[in-house]
Length: 428
Image (cartoon, rainbow, N blue to C red; front, side):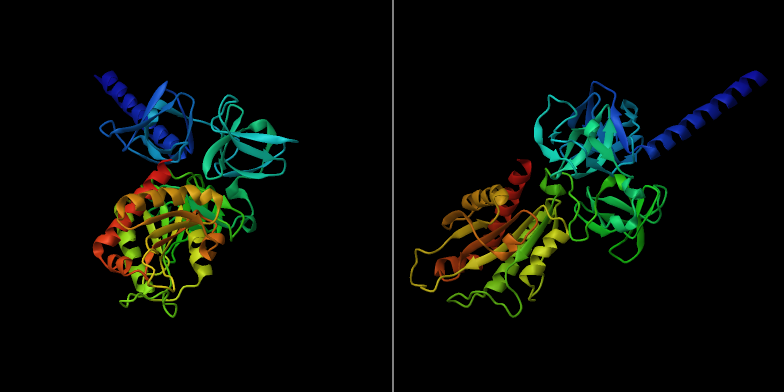
């Protein structure tokens, strides 16, 4: 009887010890590698949740958080989900997540979509370029490249100190990668969450402790964020690149109601003032986008003057995935009824796809004339660091357009159009 009791006691201690080791392993896992041939990625931490995608054997995943022995991971396409911890293994990297490195190649170094010479080439880097490293495995280095996760051959890079070991003076800001990221009261996962930060939120680095950055929260409190859930920048004026957004629900959108305060904009024959019409429309758009889960920032939410410079800067401050400026046009000759309808403007060639996606939705949903997409040299587009477009949603000089723009149904149609246009843009 005594031996049986002793056996059960020893077995119990072993099981408890294994559980503790498992917990420690999970707490320390920043990067994991898939062990199964095919691994399901689920919408929540359990087998009862829907399968949203799959990953293959040996793929490397960055761990965002863990719950009930499930890892919340960020995938190569920028999306996140949950994988079973027992079907992946922790891997050692040559330095902590978000380390800095310098390209040492004499010529150009190919940047690839996967850790293989057979994968797609996304672009090239040259000797001396600095990169942000998220992990390393089997001779390949995972990096942040033009807003997405990519890979380079480890032979042609030189690792620097871990980002959290760099001098504080060299590291200026961090950019949050995922919605709902925990900002904790201390430098460790066991500390309380004092704030939730969304994708694209930028914090100044106040200090470094281990693998955690010290930041100041929106309420002014001192907080800490893990180095493996953010991107770092060595410039206060330039935010770090974040992972590619593939869903409107993960996006940060800045909506810019044109004019305001002592800048009324155009005025219609029936008394409609542009600054008031753009604000009402922007509020309807913001409400629609927020319903989809997007983070929405208005450059103004009342009748106030905001400079063009400050409007463009707000997009950079929040590392916005899209900046949309709302206006209503006008011509001097109000008797020319042929001048009516909406136009979508962009300035940079890289923003043309955003403009075309939103304009196509406007054409489908609005009964007024669609005047297409055009290149426009507007300050808020030209000086904007983020993808940006400017929408002229109608002509105040047209009595037909003026009547429409004052209706709730018109604003809802505009909101639906922008929602659909952004959804298509992020999917593609």
